[in-house]
Length: 295
Image (tube, rainbow, N blue to C red; front, side, top):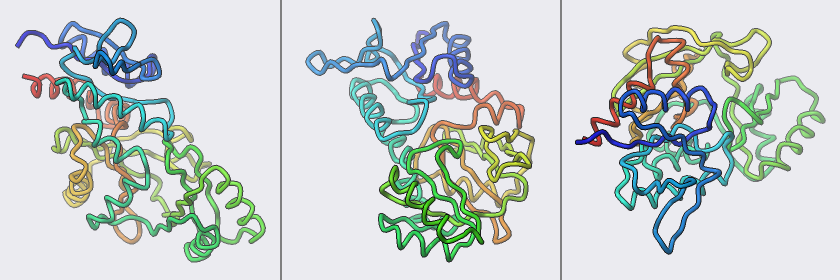
């Protein structure tokens, strides 16, 4: 086929978005970064516009980031991409499949329904049930249903005064009607990102925690490092990502004292970790994959 036109849905100026757009341009000669905040749907014309560009006229769309932060309206932006799909545009990964991952609750339930080992978790709208779970877990983490890089999470340590725990829970509940309470797993200094392309294992990197942070995210001062996983870890991560059917994904895994556990499956993360931690140009590999699929 003639060189295809593939747009990149992402955040202009962001490292991973620009890296992916660079890779598309190098492979196809076409470059277009699409900020979904500036996209509008014209149902009468059955067109999805970004500036002068009709996204329904493209061959493909690579979704790197749908919004700077996960929020419920992120789901609405994904819904718009279904119009492009209906018009024959191949979206990587399909919008309906990404929808199941933006909401932490949807991701968690899918993982547990497929018997993927995860940290003990309580999900409820009842503060008293959440408080009881915190008391059972000891160290616990309150997690928003829509967040990335541990933003908005609240770490509650065992031994804190009951009054302070109640106050923290009340403050969190004010912004998060559905309470997601997870037992804090002791990290062995790091957790892992295990990446897959087209369902096949691509590579692994570690996120090494900053000594002053309870989590390992880069946002909290962590750093990427090389890591060679066992076949057992790769098999677990592969089993975790399989139900979602994504074109590219990263599975967050921790090797806990009770065995390996999965935190979540991501539809967007992993490019920089693979680059800096594993020496893999995930952007170039993803573009090669997309062009092959379109051919």
